[in-house]
Length: 428
Image (cartoon, rainbow, N blue to C red; front, top):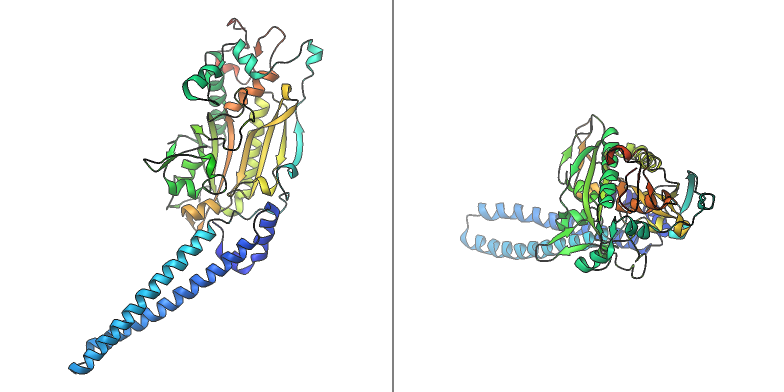
């Protein structure tokens, strides 16, 4: 949800934002009109309601029986009028809220316009490995995973269907090592570890903006009217729903760990091999509540932590400033980090971090109290610290000619000091 005062005073910046997203500019005019109709309905209802209260006193004070009967009849007509205006007011309010919920967040100045192809590469870090100098051709993560008895997609499909998998032995240990490194990195940066619910109520899922354009990506349990989360951002955003929080000591930062579920609707035929695009995965997610004025600094801080993790895993990567049309409803700006995948000869997304400004907080009614006693919405931000997909570039970039996989130094303490793992279960 956006700032209504800002919308009323300057609808053109919202139209420019919609234009940059490739979204409906007319929606802004519809909201302004619905807001005007809503406020007119409220004003008319309150005026007649005030008249009704005054008239009620007149009826009560009338002593003449015939005059009182006439006044009672008039009061009945006025009561019917008030009920009709109440219905009009409710309808205008519902119509306004329905249209308003369609409007995505106002993008931040400098966000590239356009769709996915218009996102801007900001920089590249690390050196892409030349496997020819090592005398062998790299194989993809699934072949490595099967060779090491680390990934089993065949039985994953047998048990749960396509786009599911088992991580076994070394694969399971490697994922747990990665997630533990991610959580320790988050804790060192001031994030409180949180194990979160993965089922949430509709008002929480909707409040975070995931029931808009991409609602078909979300799993819903109709019998319980609950949603499976695709990221721990959702329950962490709902943690302070309907509360006034205290940011006087600085941002409130959470590091959530959870299983995540995504339907991957519309991705038929894309990334069907291996574990790049799956329905269930594990993730450590950063989430911050900050003053609105501090949101952009917090965003860059999250990006820096993501890069710290990528460097710790010794992965070449690039940073992308995501174009407006690819942001999603809640984000005002988003940066992605994409790691190099040798067998695909390209970079693939590993992390995203989004500045949602006050959009989610307004929907979820999360505020802070200012020095003058007023309450204002906070800003919320989120960012991936690590997830299951990271195994893809880790396995591919660190594969060796003898079939083993070298372990990045930062992960070795989480694997009992293991420096490499071989096809026959050899530990080096």
